[in-house]
Length: 145
Image (cartoon, rainbow, N blue to C red):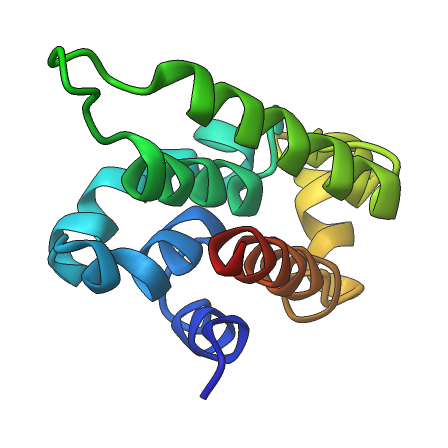
């Protein structure tokens, strides 16, 4: 099963950020349950504020796990992670025009009407699931390089 499929399956029970991070966590020595805890607040664009898409936030955490190792002098390879994050955001934006949750969904999850619209149009299983899969496909490409 691909990481995109694993994350999609996790999304049945968890938020977007949790699903992406948990799909990769154990590959980097992080327990799945700990990954779920770490990413809990990032769903819905950070606590439903609809800022950066949770799938993107989860992917950024994975990039940190994959590249956040130390240099010989003990410093973290922060610049490496920053470059990868910029690439992720650029690639995701190229595909969907933005990484902002509110713009991706076209509704306000903090309003009753927006939440109703989200549910009526099944965005969780359509739009959000596609964003999760894209984040995983991008990660798979970067991690294979």
